[in-house]
Image 1: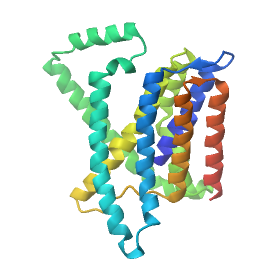
Image 2: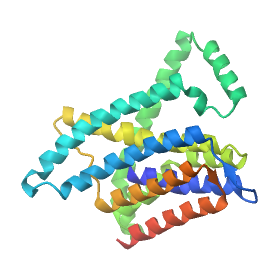
Image 3: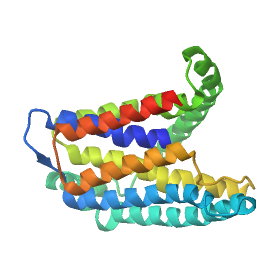
Length: 270
């Protein structure tokens, strides 16, 4: 999870900024979009940091129970916030997430055309979705089984593979698509895709897994390794500052890539 976030906001976003602004003057983000998403991104970062902070404040005998209670309560809050974000994104303020007016018009036309989907298309979509999910689960199982052998072969830790190699491989298709879009000057789309991916992980996937663990009596929490948590928080802090500044040049992308490279070296050295 942490590896996917770092890969998206540092590696992919850094490449996007470099390709979009190289040999150009200082460019600007969509300020309303950038500020909204950066605020949600910071909330995600803080909720991931709090369990680590709680470990240093509670008595040792009460740590696990307190952090577990905090994680479950906070997960419910985050899922509610994600629902609100989707309503904001898909309903009341969806114009903020469209690149231009023509895209907004196309979106309305497509919505009218698809308002009454046929039964055949719905059944076909369900079948394809089910097949894709089953294939993903199968491939994930094979990947997890091979991590230990891969670590021994490459001479690196399993944590390094989980945080560096796997996220890059799993996000490669999305990353290439976003970078290609940035090359045409559509950086706002890149921001939407990258930060939306981060919010899906931080506001939905991780809290949802905590709640599922609660339902099946598995004590899952929002607590991560201290190094990973601090690295993620600092990365989000840097990107948040960049988005709120509202302007960018290729040097900003180079800085994000340098930060990602530094984190990779630190993980390798652990």
